[in-house]
Length: 289
Length: 147
Image (tube, rainbow over all chains, first blue to last red; front, side, top):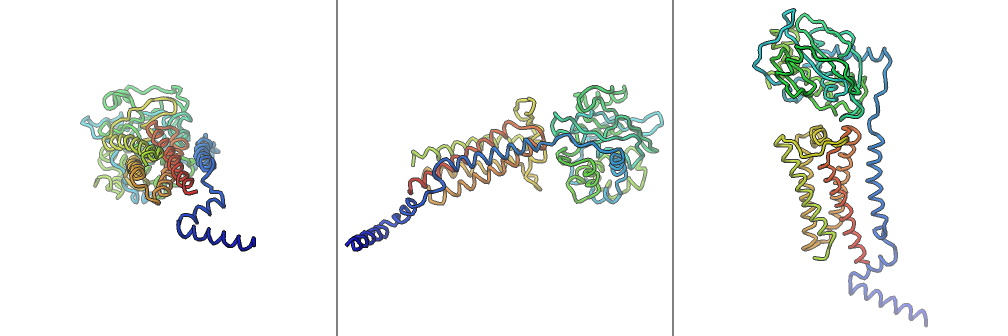
C-alpha cells in the first residue's frame, strides 16, 4: 500500500517537472546547497584582493644588497666596455630623441674640447637611470676612473634604483671633457655645489633647476631621463650590466638606445671623432630618425 | 527589473569609470598634468609616465583600456535593466574578474616598482573592485531566485 502510494507520488513529481520545465532545476537547487549562497563568495573575493595588495606591499623593493669590491669593479668594467655591435644592434632603441637642440655656441673647455655637463643627485631615480646611458656613451670617447655603485633614494619614486655615481669619479678623453656633479647623496644631504660653468648652463637651458640636467657642449640639452627608470626595476647592478649587453632586452633598448642618442650628439660637437664611433650604424640609426 | 539595484550600481560604476579613464586618456594624449595631490606616496606623474601606463608591447595607454572596460561594464548594467538575458550575469562577473586581475597587476606596479600611487588610478581600481562585488551580487540574486 505504502509502496503504491510512493510510486504515485513519484509519478506526480515527474509530471510536474515535465510540465513546468523549471521544476527539475528547482529540485536540484533544493537538494544541494549552492556555493553562491552565504557570505563565502564575497569573502573569497575580498581575501584575494586584500592578499594581492598585501603581497605587493611586502614585496616592495628593499635596499639593493651591497656588492664586494671585486663584484663592483666587474659591474663598472662591464658597463664601460659595451661591445660596439651592441650599440649598433640597438640603434635608437625605439626611443624618441631625449635631447633638445639649442642655439647657443659650442661650449669648450680649457683644452678646447667640447664640454659635456651633467648635474644630478644620488637620491634622484631619473638621474639613476640616466647615468647608465651616460657612462656607456662617454666610455666610447674616453675612460673613467673611480666610478662606484649607488642606489637612488629608498623613499622617492622608483625606490632604490641601482645606479653608478659620478661622485669621486674622473674622466679622461681626447675628444670631450666631462663636467659632472652630484649635488646630494641618496639621503638628499648636500654634498657638492655646481661650478659657475655648470650653473650658467643650467640657468640658460634649465631655469627650473630640474635634474638630471645634461648638456652636450650647450648645443644639445636633456632634462630628465631618456628612458623610464622602471625598466631597471627589481634588478641588481650585475643584472643590469648583463642585460645592457643583450640587445634583445627592453633594458638594453632603453639604456643603450639613450646612450646612442647621447653619443650622436657628442659626435656632432667632436667633428665626428672618433670615426669608429661616430660613423657606426648605431649612431647613424639615431640620425635617420 | 527597475528594482535591480546592483544593475543600477553597475551602470553608475561604469559611468564613473568612463569619466575617470577618459580624463586619464585625454591627459595622456594631450601631455598635460593631472590634477593630483602631491603627498608622500601620491605622485600621479610618476605613475602615468611609467612604462606601466601603457599596455605591454604597445603605445596604447592603459587608461584607454580602462575606458573601454568601464563602458562595456556600464552597457552590461544597462542591458541588465532592460532585458537581462541569462548569459549576462556570469559574463559580467567574468568581465569584472578580468578587470580586477588587471587592477591588481597595476596596483603591484605602483606599490612594488614605482613606489608611488596615483589617486585617479586608485579611484578607478576601487570602481573595478566594486564592479566585481556588484556583479557577484547579481549572480547570487539569479541563483537565489532560481532556488
